[in-house]
Each structure stands twice: as C-alpha cells, then as structure tokens.
Image (cartoon, rainbow over all chains, first blue to last red; front, side, top):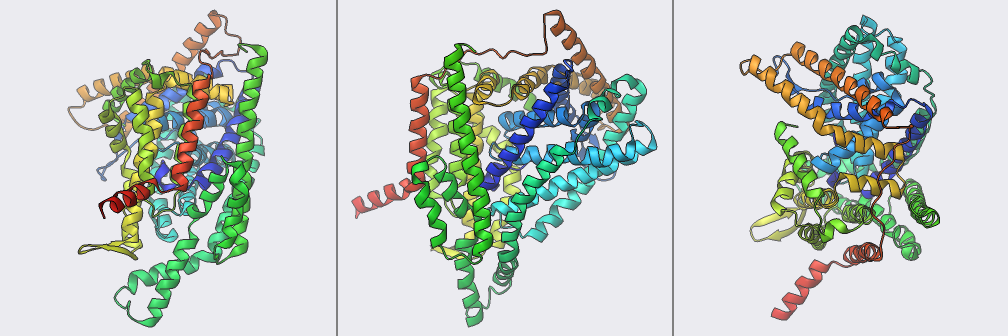
Length: 355
Length: 267
C-alpha cells in the first residue's frame, strides 16, 4: 500500500507532509509527557521487530499467496497510539530511505495512511470499544479483526483519494476504488487474524507485557483524531468539491473517448474531443500545483505566479480557487515554518555554541 | 522483503560511512536539496518528458562525487519499480488521445504520461537513495534533528536503525531453523504465529535489557544525539546553487533548447 513519489503531485504530497509532520510533533510531545523512560528502547526495538516480522511470510492455504503482519494495530495495542504512531512513522521513513519503498514526497501520505488510521481511528474507536482490554478473549478477536479491516480500508481509500487528487494516474475513481478496497479487505482479514492471534499468545505467555498498553492508552484523547480529521476533511473536502464539479464531466469525456474512438469523424464526437483536449489541458492539478510550489522557494516571484491561474480558462472557478487557496496557504505556511526553524536553530546554535 | 534485501541494507550503511566530497556536505543541505529536487520534478505537467532530463544530472553528479556504484543504485530503483509500473501502465489504456505521429506509430497521451511517470519515478527514487547513500543514517539523523524534527522521533529513527540488524538477524536465524525442520514447505499460519510471537517476546525482552543497560550508564530520560557536522559556507553555496539550477531547469526546457540549438546548427 506504499504510494510512490511518481504518482503524487507536490501539492498533495506537501499537504500530507504537513498533516503527518504535525501528528509526529504532537505524538512526540505526548510520548515525552508519559515519563516512561523504558518506552524509548521499547519503541526502537519494536520498530525493528516490525521490520523483521515483515520478512517472515506464511502461506495462505488454497490461494498460493502469502501474507505477513503489517503491524500498525499490534503496535498500538502494545504501546498505545502515540508511541505506536511514531514507531510506524519511523519504520516507513527507514523503508523510504533504504528500500525506496514509498518515496520521500509520498512519505507524508504513507505515514498518514498506514499510521493515522490504525493508531487514531481503528484502535481507540473500534478495538478499545469492543475488546475492553480483555486480551485473548473472543471479544478481542472480533475487535482485532474489525479494527484491522476498517483501518486498512480507510487507508486504502485514502490512497485512492490522494492518487486521484494528484491527477497523475488517469485511472477512473470508481475502477481504482474497486481495485483497491477488495484487495485490502482480504489483507485486512489476514492482518486482523494475525494480530489477534499474536495478542492472545502474548496474553497467555506474558500477561504483564500487555497491561502496559492500557496504562498509556487509557488517557487517549480524541484531540489528535479530531484535529487530524478536521485538517484532512478541509483538504479532501476542497479537492473533492473540485472533483465534484469537474469530474463527472471528465469521466464522461474519457468514456466517450475510449468508446467513440472509431466515430472520430462524426461532428459530435469531434466537438467532444476538442472539449476534452481543452479540459485535459486545464483540469489536472499538477499544472496547477506547480505554480504554487515553484512560487514557494521564490517568494519574489510568488505574486506573478499566484496571479497566473486566473488567466487560464477554468471550468469551475470557485471550487478550483478553493483548492488553490488551501494549498497555496499551506505551502506558504510550510515555507514560513521551515524558514523559522532554520533561523531558530542557527540562532540557538550561535547563542549556545554547541547547544 | 527477503533476506537478500537485508544484506543490501548493510551495504547501504557501508556506503553511507564513507568519506568523500559528497559525504562531507552537511546532511541538512543534502536533505533540503533532495526534497526540493523531488518537489520540482513532480511539479511538471503530466505529459512532460524532455524538460525532466536535465534533472538526471543531480543524482548522477552526487553519486559520482560520493563514489557510489551506479549499478547498485539502479538495481535498487528497479526492485522498487512495480507499484508505479502497475498504476502507470493503465494510463495508455485510458488516455488514448493522439499527441503526435512518429513514423508509423501514433503516440497517445497515455503513453507519454506513462513514460513521464516512469522517468519521474527513476528521478525521485534515485535522488532519495542518493541522499542516504551519500549521508548515512547517523549523519542524517543528526541533520534532521537540527532542522527541527522532534528529538523523540529522531531518537526513535536511530534506535530503530540500530536494532534493525540485530532483530532481523534473529528473524533470519528463526526462519532458517524453521526451514530446516519443514522440509521445504512454506510456513503454516500456526507455525508463523508462534514464530512471530516468540520474536515479539524476545524483542521486548531485548528492549528491557537495553533499557537496564542504559540506566546503568546514567540514562536520565534524555537521549543525546551526537552532533559533529556544522553548516559551513560551502554547504550554503551547494544549497543555493542547486536550488537556482532546479529553478532554471523548471522555467526553461533546457533539453528542448539544446535540441533546437543543435538542429539549428545542422540546418
């Protein structure tokens, strides 16, 4: 489910970087506040465990394929959502760095898809509610299964949304959803079964290892969930509103193009085709996003670039500018934060010598 | 992820520890430039190919400065390719709008965007791998912390990286012993669960031992990341130079310009 850089526009990638970065900062603060020193080595070693666990595959009877543990849910059960989110983020970062498994630009998306949903949605809203900390019981089995499936489905759906909003792959939305969700339903069932079995094993073999989880997870507040969801809703809402206005149309013309290829001479199809050409030139987000991202490093040039989109013939101006506004604002924010950080670290360094 | 990948990660670590001009550039500078590189490359419209070509220069120059074997990086890119390939290959079937005709072949928009996706894939993955190969995890971690990444997260990254080799060696040993006992059959779910659970318990025990060892050495809840590098003038020049070059290549299609110049010269 790792997304690659090549399919993501800087706008989508940058936005999710901001979201995931914010979540990392938030979780880092929370973990620091727990005052459990032994969490530091525990998190590191469990991250390494997730890596190692992904090397070991088991055969799924009757299918000829094999499965392995994804690990998001089990981590959350063991060390609580905040620490688990950081571990998942670190695992994905190392995977991106060393295995080119998911790219750097897509890292924010991957952390969000694979970390946020299991840690802040599936665990607190499903697993904890159903399992009620009775590890190893049938309740916990159901809880793990449902939580794993829901977490992965949300993640997979978010992959579709992000890819679609990037506009680089031309896969129609419906087909993409139909491709992603059933596959991840199967993966989710396997993941849920494996998670439940491992947890019940640990509950029997080392019951004292599990109660540590509720201790740190008991005080899980809904704040990060709400903040994360709010931010993504705004972003995805903006993007979806844009699609809602242009996409049904876009789907139609792409259908017409595919089916009406032979009747290219007929005048109706010709008009459609040329309309489609115009639309294709204007409708894709990357063309759009570039103006802002390029404007980002060059603040001097930002004024002329920001004005540029208005000159293009845009089919749905309101929706389009809403996306542009959100995205442009966020990118400037990122830039401002970055500049601030750079200056701050420079100044702290010069003030304190070695710091 | 197989065992062979594991040997690869050790190789990457070795490469990252070298001392070359590329390795001596500050980690922060390389991280920023790499990120800018990826963003600029991905900002091109989806049918662009020629304008992307000058960007190949950056990873190649850095790799050669860092004395990193090009074949090694290429192989890693190839291993990672399937996802982009699977999604990208659908473009030619969906977008069949003809863009131009080369000889007897009609080039459709879908094919152009597919080639563009794959080329971007090589560029972005190559740049990320170049960054790691020319920096190494420890220097990169220190650099990230200085940029402002939360220390808890940087410590987590370094801890994870440190124990990656240890825990995975344990997993490899387990897999070998399971393979010796199973006469070539692949693992059943029951055996798998037992192995994973034991690996988990061992990992947690290890974390506990590590923690006690840390306490014994005076750990007070605060992990100190070793800082060595400093941001010097050459690093700033490197960053500015690269950013200006990326910007120029983004504004002007250098490859097209070169082509016109050459064609003009011939005609």
